[in-house]
Image (tube, rainbow, N blue to C red; front, side, top):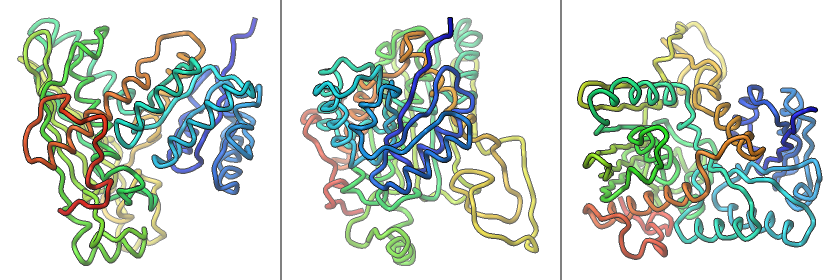
Length: 410
């Protein structure tokens, strides 16, 4: 008897959805069968990409409800913009409650929501119809993170004690689409956009494999945000021209750092995380470190083992064929082959397909995504107040960062 296959529909047709689709070539037991986007042309284009990659007979749907109602669609991958999250989830849940369709699960890209209030609301919605959930955090599934964590705990921590310091960073020159730069749409700046990765990575590295994430408990958080590059007159002018965001009036942070004190079974451990939209380098750089009594690990995605050199005589159009967020086409350039795999997309999609088919428990659910949002909002609160805060602080469930309100001043 053939094993069951999961029919997957994508909400969203942009860069993130397409990265998932590229990685889907390494996913078994599932096919991409649908795409919905408010831009019908983009939905058709993304569906055509899925077909060209031979990952499923994808078609563009006219509405989310129509996609949920299609009996071939068993699960939804939610990859649309932050500001559309609530309305997208409301339509999914409405379609299920009205009997128009059924689903086995829903997976949502980071961050789960723009603030705690929104995260609580959509989590309650999906639970009201009994949907299995997955929180799409690709960096936990990056092969280097998976292998390094497993070996450190099996060899170093097992003989000399658990790790006590983890670091993680994500840095690049800025997002692809205008809505990311708009704090009132996106929900913040680089802290909301990318710290969701790094803050969860440090906690993951400090958690013993097989133990609950709650065994490493955040107890104090210190956050700092700044606009280092994009509020400068030259770059603010450039940003307004290319992305429509006026950082002379309504800036978002392009740098953020967070220090998290974790309570563990063996005392305090520290997580240090930083993110930047003001990084000047070859392109996207992911990095992580883990340190313990007699061991350490480190990872830098730009240390890929493959480098190319192009002299100034080699000219051509700008692109991202060497590395995501590529900043140059000349000189010595690191290349990250199969970025979608290196960054963890293939592994995470394979995992959540298996989870929704009942083959293994989900490593991350929307409850975990909610916890991440709580950490991010505490970091914003700390940055605004200029002091370390206990976790969770007062007023967290109704807090909206000044960046998201459009009132933050660097």
